Image 1 (cartoon, rainbow, N blue to C red):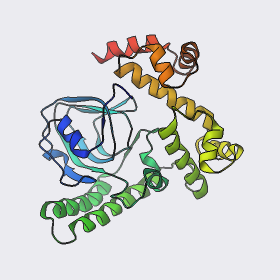
Image 2 (image 1 turned 180 degrees about the vertical axis):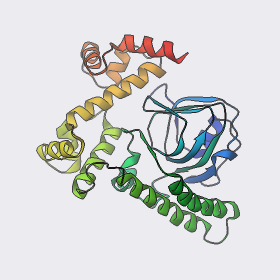
Image 3 (image 1 turned 90 degrees about the horizontal axis):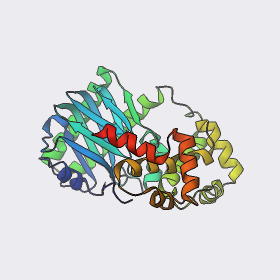
Image 4 (image 1 turned 135 degrees about the vertical axis):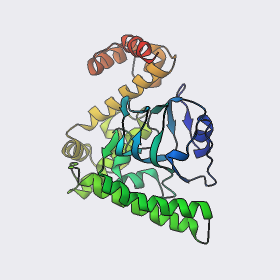
Length: 299
């Protein structure tokens, strides 16, 4: 949507930060945070067309904002950001650790939805930042060092080795994530439906706004979809669809100059007054008050 840039290519993001790094591969780039030297102190709200996986071992005056949630002092944290997710950051000091930009295709998945079935902690509706121990950091760090070695020397089969090693990292993180007490991992069928539903909502929340439309895409009944999503998330699919539209409205109010009527119609609300009432009910602000409050706090 207008006003929030999307960096489809990995190097587009590097160029936007005026960094010293560039990737020779369009679908994968791994680097140490200490090697990242940027000529800009901050990057306003943006989306990417690829996944980001960061393994943070501490930061000095570094702040990252994901889904309107601000995070700093990230020592021993895993950060997972999905394509289309709103992010921004401010960097005044150093950030230690590793970062990987990658596509679902690199991870041998045909689509992002297939990838999210196995790794739901990249879903953009959630802010997926969770702590790890120093021992876990060191263990995963061994894999990262192997990838960086292969990426630097580009020997025979280097990309295949890097891919296999990165898949080991993803599985290690999946094990950590599942051990944090996240709900629903005993129900594989429910996980698949919930992951596909969340992905489809992220793709179609403007044009498809009813439970029936998503049930049809998933080839299940609306009742089955409602029961499954409620069991897996504690929420109804209708509330998730509406919440996604309201969240997008927040981004547009905060980061663009579109007026209220334009935003209402962009997000397929039947009229501005309906949008205004729903927004106030769910956020506690009118759209105009929300814009004024957050614009004043951003500067």
